Image 1 (cartoon, rainbow, N blue to C red):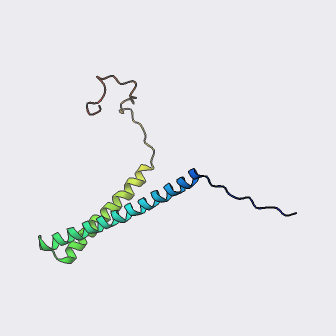
Image 2 (cartoon, rainbow, N blue to C red):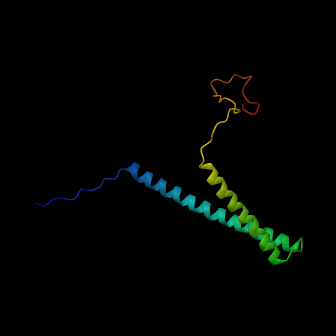
Image 3 (cartoon, helix red, strand yellow):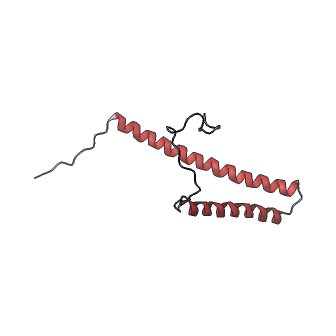
Length: 112
């Protein structure tokens, strides 16, 4: 007995969804490329300013920039490690207020 293989039927909304997903992925890749280019341009610009304007040696400028990058990486690692820790409420924490329970008098002044 021969069995036919099922065929996939695509309607126009599936094709549009697939195209939209492709566009989103392409835009995310482009954003990452521009982000990396801007960060490396900033590092090169700071290095140039340190060498030309402040008369730092290339070695000293490189060490300074690598120290900044290393501190940012370390701070990011620490932030991510602490973000995984559950927050423990203390007795001194104010009670949580929902927007519904707030009156105009108790609403923070920065909130509209």
